[in-house]
Length: 246
Image (cartoon, rainbow, N blue to C red; front, side):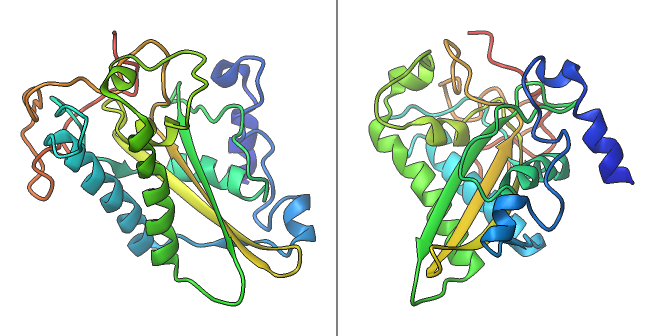
């Protein structure tokens, strides 16, 4: 009943305007029609995997924030990411489609500009742990830094058509402090073990705005820094999920 009520809530146009919210009449918990034809199943992301996703993001965000990522300046107020169950639920609505594609809108009452990263990994004749899959997928997003530049993150380009950088920039948004993910499994073409990871974030990439504000590491953190990741603000830092003003 609660899921049904939420599904109706997300049909409210106040969240997405004329676009369809992924949470409006989402696929059932057993998966959408395409999942049924592919024997799709939900991969439960237990608290251990959730913690791994969060820590991998924070480890990499910290690398940039302290100025240790070649080609990029340090960050003056990079928040620590924490898990958000609402974002995870919205990610699940996408994942259960078994369709490797961004949904057009995933906004919620709290997140008016929610962002999203997707990853798909297929293989046969072998198996991989969820731990390995998550590490591989997050690393693939991060690797896009090689095609990004400081100029691109200082002002995220509108209508960008160059090599993919959006997964990386999503990972280092300093207006994002929350993440929630979901994973789906299915068998493609009868042999391919296929894993689909969807991660939703508190804020998406915003054109003509800074992805993060460069400056002395953690200089503008109001609540101090994270003991484990000293380049990041503490988990008490309150960062509204709204775009940078410039």
